[in-house]
Length: 144
Image (cartoon, rainbow, N blue to C red; front, side, top):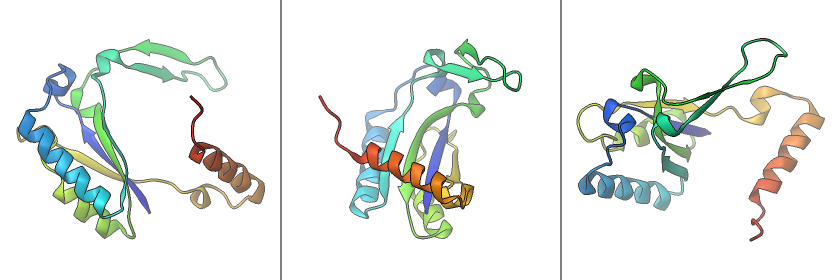
């Protein structure tokens, strides 16, 4: 089971305020724990939404609309994420509960969401084979 721990944005993260050295080291120690346990797949912070781009689909079958950031409502913004693979929902919650306050100021909020697996989406063998081929391609080393 894969889960994403979504770190919600704050006014500080949207303003580009960088984490303290202590918080950065605490997060690195946490990520190291995840890696040593063999559950860490990815972990990254994201730049403020001022550098973001939003693509929306205002009409069915219509042309996508591009909107440059910044976006409003910091609580709806994603400031970072950690992707883990664990054996149960309970294990995912346990790992999420161990994450240091991602903003270090009592404003941190993490949303934990399970990732849909291919079998959750379809039972069609051709579609599953296509999805497996894409994942195999992703796993190949990138050419310089």
